[in-house]
Amino acid sequence: MEIRSIHRYARISAFKAREVTREIQGLPVSAALDVLAFTPKKAALLVNQTLKSAIANAENNANLKAEGLVVKEAVVGEGPTFKRMQTRARGSGSQILKRTSHIRIVLTDEKPEKEKPAGEKKTEEKAATTEKKPKKTKKTAKAAAKK
Image (cartoon, rainbow, N blue to C red; front, side, top):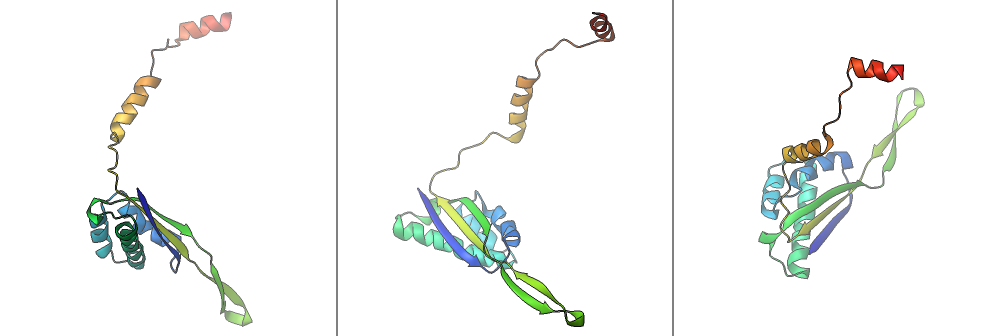
């Protein structure tokens, strides 16, 4: 079962918040809370609030225990941008962009499937693509050119 929580219009740029959400993807909830507690960034506080909200949703709405939950997905999308003006030299002005973001966390009670290590995938693909093909030598290339 999937449990969702969304923090909309968070006052932080999506670029900064994505750095924190990448760290907690795939972790159990207790480990994710520990990582967020010791991350010295503003985004960690916002993601922590969203994660706690998702845990509360799981306990109250779906009757699930927090110990068995895993962070399946932690995504940050861009929200609307507030445009402000700041005065500059010689009576001109420049635009200040105050970015917002939407933080979405999806928890699941299913165990993640074990994936093959990256090295094993490459060897299987390599074996499939490397079939014995006749090599062209100078003699065969000259023979083919004469025909």
